[in-house]
Image (tube, rainbow, N blue to C red):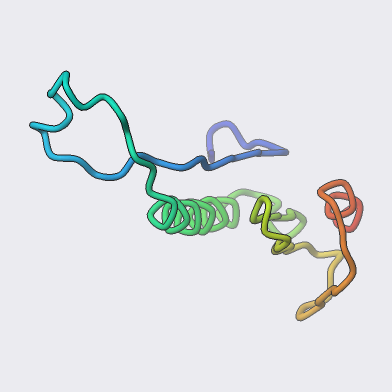
Length: 103
């Protein structure tokens, strides 16, 4: 990220497969892969936190905004110089509204 210095970065995390042993992975009999939604949420949480940390290391970080949206769950986190700390909204908003609040 430091070399590219992006102005915008969109990262989307998707459900991962549950962890399998090497024998299960190599077995042709069991090709069905079960998803691991709880593990995927932990991955997305940690991944977005690391992206935010890296974003803070870039030049101009004090002017940057960060949006984390928990898709299909009605929750989002917005960090932006244009938003006062501790602001909370109980009104429904879509992704377009979130982007409008940070500009």
